[in-house]
Length: 533
Image: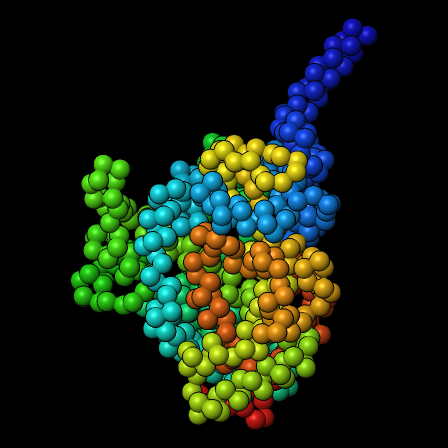
């Protein structure tokens, strides 16, 4: 009996040691290099609070950043994966701009082999393939292209406000599928639901030439797929964390981030759109058209000169095209709607700022005889200040990342040499809330971005769309669709705090989306005097 107990004790001890070694085998990475770092926990690294849902992901990034105060950079562990967190703005500039060729790529959390529709996106592509794709897509986001799409997006904004106005005026109007409740002359609206329907329609018309009207037709498949695809809570959040923990294991288990139905939907949509345009000779100045040109090799400036001096054209597969549309959909559907949600709530919570913005909107529309123009939207300085401050407080991207592709020594003490494959992260959310760069950082103060004050913001501390050659290619588009929605909404409605409004704003701990539990509920009250189109 005693002998058997000793054997079991020995076996249990050996198993415990093996498990411990498996859960910590990378956790001496930074101590070996004499790099300041946060102490990791077996298996979890420094990700424990998010994995166990005790804090939100943005809060964890701030915690990492603050605990490394006094250092220009430091080490954290995404489970078993050691990553350098950059705190110093000059270091951030070196990595993302000056020495960009050493940090050309994003980290491939989800590989092309595991998920072609994510791995082949502009975000996931690497090296020369990324350069080719960026060059191909850049013409779709120039100022001239934005002007061409302005009218289409404005129609979506008008459709949004007309629907809300009808909800208030027609008490017998049935509201199905949308999260809207009537409270007398005020509509209580869940703004995330409202704005994702708007951004969904914007993408449908500007990328595919499709009219969805997701408010009057709330059950349309286009919107349903978009909402499912951009939901990073629940099982989807666990899958993403699983890829952070061990991409190889997730690939071996064949666990997909994109469901088969979602992948099939987007492939079918892109292919049918291209076929219809080919058959009917339809030409639209949008992303689909550019990608069709690229596939045929007729896109101006797309040729590449090889090292042998021969001119070649990149070979385009159908999934290459579909993948770019998928990432455009993902960014446009969720990023702009997130910005609109936080902007609306902050304005409702600060009625003086809301009134100031409405005064600018009213004056601008009056000068243009009620017509909303591209030049007018981009000329509204206070609108830009409000949007910029919202992006400071609640940037849709909590952090940015790069991966070292050529050996590089960080120009800071202690010296640390990064090898190809080593990852770095830029803590955007934490930089935006550092009192050294933004005094009283929790305060919503658009005046930070006035003409007089904007120049005082330290370079590389305000990064809502990233920095350098791999910054967000669609930032102009996202800002334009957000500003159009705010102008049209505030010209016709006042935003009000209602009992269901989440105050104070607390980012959810249950997923990785930049959102709040229970939704962004606000009241919409029709203005007595307003300037409409």
